[in-house]
Image (cartoon, rainbow, N blue to C red; front, top):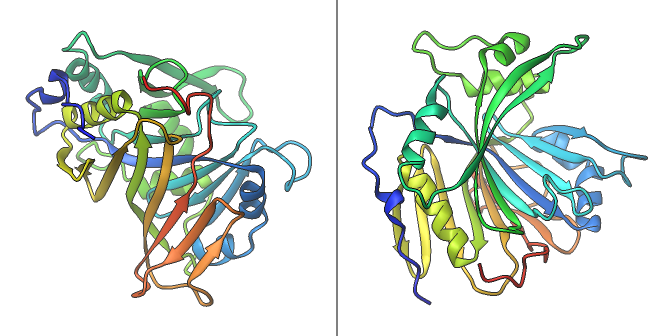
Length: 302
């Protein structure tokens, strides 16, 4: 099938001094069986990465909490199908800006074209043992259409939040992502944790949503090429492949992660019937594949 052209706002002249957003997090909703296998895994926290379960209700295995599996600078967050990151959303990507003030510039670039639509919000939270709300981070969410099962967040943390975490910026004003993640999780990775960082993601989207995603990232400095019906976007140490499809469930198809070394035992690990982690023959990377859930928009061709 023909891939729709990127709309004009995707071709805005980008100031190359403008900081490009970097991948921060991949969000995936899992069916109950896969979610339980991830939460109960001994291998993942022992050999792969820092493990964080939050928002669980009831017992750990039966709860609907999200599960975070951390690399050095990036994070994979798994959600139970009954408790997605947002209602009706089965997958998404979170990008972050590393220099203060970047999100304002990003909004200016993206809003040059009236066809672009996004929701902006300043998220406020109370610090531990405090009741007063402080600005925590800026959040920009492009509009992917009604009932979209896929979403993207563009974020920038505030100086107030960094002060609470005790994370200083570099002399040039940029944020050291590893220090931020270490502080947010409460510890650095252990020597036995093999996840280095997410280097690639493949998603499947309807034509319009593929266009919105590609246009958003190219406007913000990503390079793009079309190969055999796929759009491939290149960012800082990261490659995003968009498979355009009119009917199959949308969502995250795979995540590629660089490894520091191969695991001690095994080359393939299955988490239920819809999730599989496979180590590359050279042991330097792994690919985690998923079967996207059929969300409310699975049959929508918007």
